[in-house]
Image (cartoon, rainbow, N blue to C red; front, side):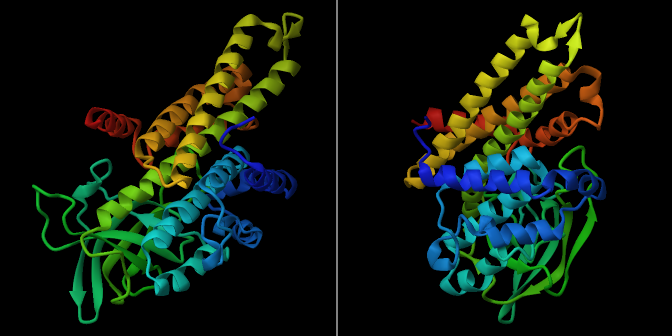
Length: 384
């Protein structure tokens, strides 16, 4: 019995689990990972199922599901296909969530349907070549141009860039101030068909290969006067708020990745025989599985606790950081244990555990490294 999960959340996660296991999704993963692209028809199907709009309020055409439900759904998608889960997390978590919280009625009406219909997946453009963990030092600029804005510069490592109908772009209005680096940072909703916007070549990644990661190039890109999301100079707070929610999503992804890798390892250990008996009979392996499963359950509870806090309007920055830190590092241990249990086969692409180990590696890096999470947690503890 999970104290954070109700019947509705269980039903939604079960429906997504059934879809992922019963629609031939698994058979399509190897080709898509080799190609480096998510199948457009699967994205469209997630739109029809309502998954892409589950975090959007019913008044805006979405399902209005809880953060707990979304975390459970991301776990199921990650257990099935981490690359797909990442795209959904960015679209329906950070991008949709930011527009729901900070968008005008006109912006919500115009842009939220494009994040729900399955025609693409929204992008969140914060990172630059010289501003990763130090996000406030970004150098992309925005300046007034008549009734609109001109945005110039380049964003790096942008998830969904190739599929995105729109991106939330963080840009600086005014001069860079080394004493107040976040001053002037403003959020803009930028349609990717706007003049001056282009997408760079896809990055060649260790894992999550079907999830597009590309540069977003803004060459004096022109957007309208209604493109600003929230207030001028308040964009950094919007970005950090979005990342808080996104960290719950990464914790849930980490749980799904670790869960599936351990399921595969456990099944293999019962079938694989050495020295005349299944390797599951050996105490060393049993202890490894017991430790990994205990860590997995703890990580899930941390993720759901942070989501539960968010649903109740309580501060959850520290809880989200704790969940991401613990769950992402747990996923490293669990996937590596799975590879070890499969031995030589675990290193081969014929067995999925090597992909889960590669895919899980990113969870300690994106949306704030483990080191950044420790800074966030310590700051919160020492401010009390």
